[in-house]
Image (cartoon, rainbow, N blue to C red; front, top):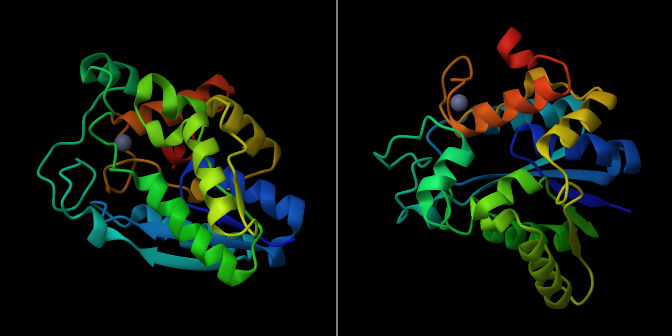
Length: 227
Ligand SMILES: [Zn+2]
């Protein structure tokens, strides 16, 4: 069976890719990276290196045009500063709405695009790395279990049963994801999570805080911090 994995170059999607290569073999895995007009190309560069490392086919799709009306702080054209605090702190102030680094309906678009490509490439399942920490407090509602279920139903229906989606980490924490990845020897030194595009991770944005904590909880130091 062939599968498609949505890859962002980060910890979660890279762990997901590693699991799929172990399960299906590299020739049956297609990696799809989508650009949404982010402020830097580090994630894409990481995705390319990781696809090469695992020897899987890599497809790149640019959806940045769709997001040009958004003032989300992650986007290249936005003057908004990327918040230097944890997701928990941001959620406290967000009044139940998504955090400022929420890109409008990003996963919805990514999954719909992935469904189309999956049908064309003969892939039966789309995997993506959404996990429970990201959905907590409605920070990223398009990472939640209920979103995943609804999107799966839409994609199954709309593809005539040819494609379904699976989010193996949807009920996991990021700590669990890293634990799994360490078992699979995922080359985390090739990954990139930070919202800022500097040489080293900034260490203070939401995703940096999240990532370092997930490594620390597993008793290891993030290899990007050691570099
Ligand atoms: Zn950062």
